[in-house]
Image (tube, rainbow, N blue to C red; front, side, top):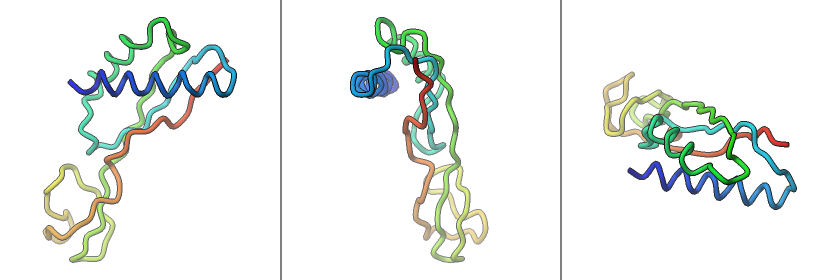
Length: 113
């Protein structure tokens, strides 16, 4: 389950930012996670709660914003929403598309003291 390593990386990033910017507590963290990022959201929530103990994020709430999969279809020259990799274009049925979004995982915002 790679969600634990993701949770640890999020905590490392948060801790580093806390040191650099001089804050002591994190109240809330907003993550943007693409629908195609291969992240099990409930497993990530569990992992985050487990690894946040004894850190500046020990009491932090985790808010997850899910971003849709997006692609540019070369066949119909349209930006389309996709639900899974290797699916056909929902407009024209073609397979000549390039992923443009939905595979990201990033810290969008933090509420801190």
